[in-house]
Length: 102
Image (cartoon, rainbow, N blue to C red; front, side, top):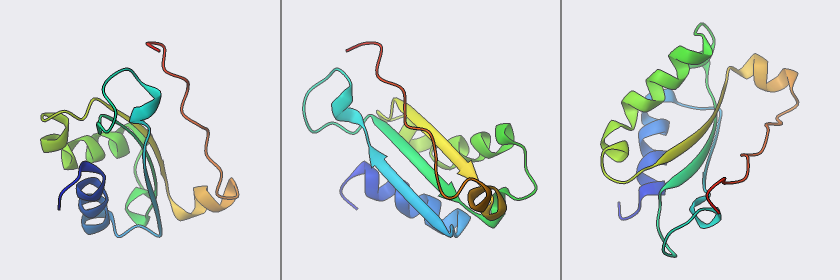
């Protein structure tokens, strides 16, 4: 796979078998050269999250993406839901906040 977004999607699909997955490259909203892949928003809905606390969910994602985080992935905005949570909020998540660095 040639780009970070594809690698992130593949790792999450393989590990989580998500009912819904969005991996959005938000790098253009941050400082740096065009075309970089440093900031991503992840929305994932999976049964794997049904019995875990938000902190455990985040840790799991950080562990899955450790290689990406050590090779240029700078920021992840994580929205991780069980199917019941996702249904309760009608499939809506908050948007990432604007970058403070420009």
